[in-house]
Length: 116
Image (cartoon, rainbow, N blue to C red; front, side, top):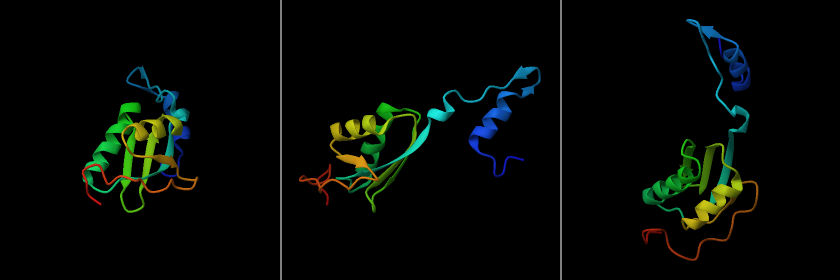
């Protein structure tokens, strides 16, 4: 029934549905949620993945985070702005830029735990 239906169409359908006498309400702020991709330098190991994920979740605890060490790319599905995430990742020691921009120069320091 829902195959090929956008999240917004599902939200509209659910927003008007009633089950067992209870009205279903769509997720608040659905249109505010989005996918961001960031190029992040300094990530080299599993510890880096955990630290980056934790930094993102500090800004947006409900965000879905995917870290790809090979491409040095972080995908975040949530409600945070790129600026908020870039600031928090920088504070955590991982310089980041929006993926559509050129990646920053390689970090001068080694990875967070000395690996590289």
